Image (cartoon, rainbow, N blue to C red):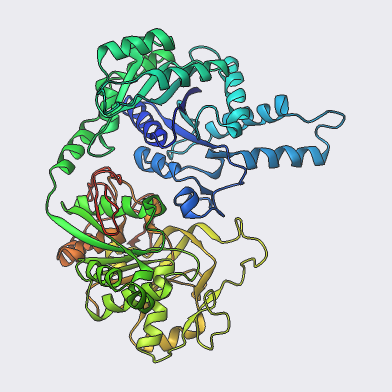
Length: 603
């Protein structure tokens, strides 16, 4: 096994995750099998209990692992399926050590950071690197490891020490270190400054790690004299110093690395030059160029409560982008803070209230993503009501589906106090209830998590057609509340259609309004399985409906097989989360390059 370690210096937010993903893609284009590991130095066991404001979205894996959002980047760039073992945290390491100590595994010894913690980290890396993630048997050829945080952080010190030992243990030719650093350009003098990177590399070397490659973030390509200076002071060959300068979108990053021969430096460091082929990024290059040329906009209103930090909805935005590019549309996201749609905002801040509604009413389609807590729920309900009554395409995900059901019960059934017991435990009309198997005492890892099967009960519904006439689909979940099965007959009698259910038939997974052009709510999170070349079926449906192409899409979908890995069931295609790439050839997506409007947020 060969290992590539990606570290970061000077400041956080330089794009280590994108760099690691791009390196993985570049190596994969050279014919190598690649896997990834993300190390997060925080003490949380996983990302499941962290606020989106704190750490961005929580990405959910097939096995139910709640992990860092960078694992979503790895899966999308490399088209692989990772496991919870591929995300290492300080909490996981210490928990494992303490469990062993309590069992007596270290009997008679003093348990210390060195060697016990550092040995556990190295063993975990080796174990996770051997897990197949690309659907093939046997381990990958190269494991790309990203160390979160910045060199010098106290919490990452045990990992630095462990990785220093690890590089010595696996030996020269099996370990390559890529250090991502910052070369700022001071506006006053217009000169690229190398001192921050010099200090960062000096600190890294002082901790026992020597970089093989420097990936320098800057506003423009590094001057030759700057490269020479960095080479001299950082002890890195000039040809191993690459610039990750500002680009329109992050799809260009793998191309920047290839054009600067980064793959040759990495392959040389790993003794793979004679084994790997020249990188083939023909399709990637074409997609990147095509995306840069899109100009016909499709406006989607994103009605949420975490819009101050767009990373909170990273996978949703990527899925929207994958679908919009397939339909050759320039995605424009209209951010709408849900609480700004509510009457209390109209009283306290009429201008903000008016602006929020203008954004909503000016959109071609409306998406209400998942979330927790009661803030902004009434605004989301009003958004669903507007979409339903105005025949605007609507997609509700997780909580978005639940509020659509609550709105329908209130407006159509006349149950004005209908609610979720999450928001009103004493409601006399609980449309959404706590799941029987859920825990009310422990938060971490107690939700319904990971890939679960949904059976499509209505063959001619829009969802089934979008999924290629599948009889069931496998999508990822993350929720602890569900639609009350005791109210289903009443809701369906009033016009709602619960077209997708779990194996028991009592847990609602997909709801549609047959009388509406496009109104779909899903309990699962289809965004987690969307891939650049294989956009999510439901996101494709939303974009198609928003730009007047839904009928054409449904007709094509019903005639094109969407069998992806699951085989055939009852003579019909089955589906495991995204459209087959032979039909849906969307571009590889990212937030960068998406035009985003509303509340002062722009990209």
